Length: 236
Ligand code: GLP
Image (cartoon, rainbow, N blue to C red; front, side):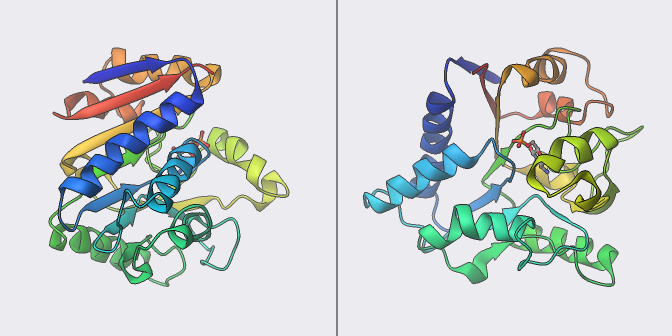
């Protein structure tokens, strides 16, 4: 594991964007695994700057996102599809038809999960997976549990996650109780994993996840078994 500590969110974002940019430049038809949350916002802003400067071309890039709230469609401004369009896709030349976010709005979420995993497999897997980390150690929406779940699946969100994410909603009651998330198989099969975390409140969970025991009660800890993982942490 490559654990990098930096002293500002700006440095974290620059470094993360450079790592993703290298994949886009060097891999033909790169498949980017993307994340939502506040952590990647700076990284996406840097990628947009690089695109505007003519350094990056996303024409042949495909993206697969980690997760989506159950019950929110892409027109809902709290959905992760909306977030991705707003904060990245509409500013770069990626083909929107090659941007994938699991749907939390179908009648059959189990089939949606199976189709999502098959689609990732058919793409040849993910070249680089960007991740944030929840305060309880979740990645995507893989919440602490007795076991790791392999496939894309529906999860009940932990109260701490609902509480943490309520800052984006009008009230805590408006936060969906369930989400659909990529499971550990596709994440662990990614050729590279890049996890970014910032803020003093993430210090403890980052320590547990990367320097503590590997346990499904701290989902991100499974990444210690990945052969190419970079963690960038900034306390500020
Ligand atoms: C959400 C997302 C995660 C994200 C986490 C942390 O719950 N599903 O993918 O990593 O929040 O978010 P933030 O970066 O805002 O702390």
